[in-house]
Image (cartoon, rainbow, N blue to C red; front, side):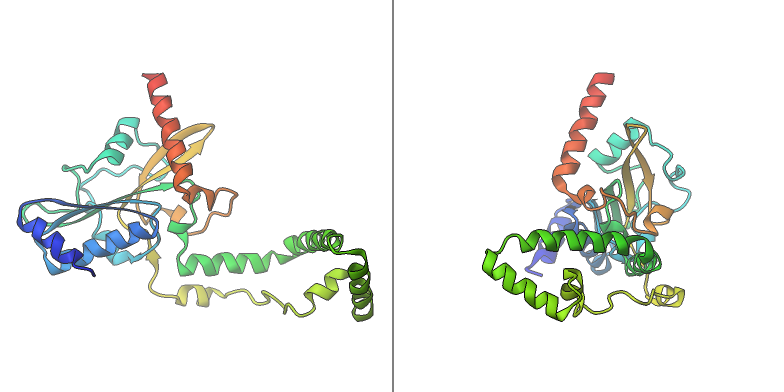
Length: 269
């Protein structure tokens, strides 16, 4: 759209290599644009660099966005990549290990995912699976949530003027047993009642996954580490519920952690 494809084709004809960079949704758009351009012009060589990409391609397309099996000796998931290897992967394309076939073009995607970032894991199947777990464990979280709701409502009653508050409380007493939680939740519906079945989860197709090779940055025993993985890594087959799952998607957090890594490197050097 907007003539972007025509501009990229012109650069290709002039002998330029195409590199596209994006964050979050932009990383997904960059990959899809590259795949569409390659389909239109199979001679194009396109490198995509993404940060916190979404699950946006099927497994068949994902396999076409990183080096073929056997070309790169792949390390086991969460087996730390040497710092030099991580730095090379993050700073520029590896011409020795690429999904691009010399003389034929192709699309090579390298993404960076931080910790428990939920966006790369947010496929329909993963969301249904976590919804099922939430329903299955509602006996654990419902009592605590109800107590929290009651506390919030009691505090809210103290915000109104005394006369208004008294009038409202009389109405609550008439309509309920006197428990404000009963008044506020009586029209809220039953909420989640039925967990998604295995058939529901497996029946959502196609399975979407994050594209390309992925530098997964994580913390272990207080140390910042990284692994070179792809969509086959089991860690992308479920949403990791943690207090960091949304914060790890933030650009500011990622930049601060990169700064920490550079400082650690200088101190060790």
